[in-house]
Amino acid sequence: MNAQAQAVVDGYMRDLKRELRALPRQRRQEILEDIDGHIDESLGRNGTATEADARTLLEQLGEPSEIASDARERFGIAPVRFGAVEKWAVFLLAFGFWIAGVGWLLGVFFLWSSNAWNRREKLIATLSPAAILVSFASIPAGFLALLLYVITVPIWLAVIARRRATPARG
Amino acid sequence: MRCMVPPGEGAAIAQLRRGTLEYCVLALLSEGERYGFDLVRELSEVDGMVTSEGTIYPLLSRLRRDGLVTTSWQESNSGPPRRYYKLSPAGEKALASFAQEWGRFRDAVDGLVGKGGRK
Image 1: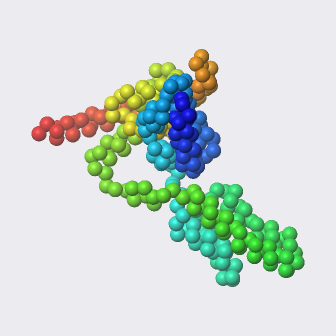
Image 2: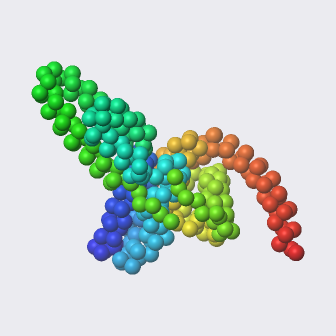
């Protein structure tokens, strides 16, 4: 295929990879490999395939967002939203310490009840305050570390959730 | 939560197609193992079966996760190795039990809708 066709295909594969991010890594890899093989089978060995040929083929395959939403349904994965639960989690993890600490615990509860973050991210957000308190026995250093936590971790979580959230579709 | 629009007849057919597609894939594989690309081409040739060809690949991946199909890489004489899909014993069982249920279901729908359509 010519350079323009290759560019169209590359853009499509990039979009597809991003759209499929909610799937487990291995499954996503499989789907990307198969679709890449499909495109290659149709266009790759045809040295004269043009941009128009590429567009026709990709249209038959379907929009990346359409394939991804079908895939999420097949795997029973609820779409990620940056909704009320996620916003409360971020807010309470940031400001909950000053509501007698209870707010923070409630934030942890919201954190774990959302599908916007994976287990590793939830563990980091939950356990790092304890690790901070243990490793900094002295009050000022521990306080500074905690301050750093409430500034950085909620922002990090919000960025992740917003990036993963799928726009609502009709 | 996803808002569900009450399905019209178009949506009803789309749901039905979606639900039965995996058994159509299993049925094709019961004739022998296949390369994903050939499978997609065969399904696309059946009128009204597949609207977006790309959606078959996630389906194949899920069938594999559920152990209904197995895969193997095979050399091809015209390009890189290809992933072949093969029906597993569990897949055979799932297909057989669906085929039986489907026969009953189809007769039931034909009995009711067929009558209504002939008015």
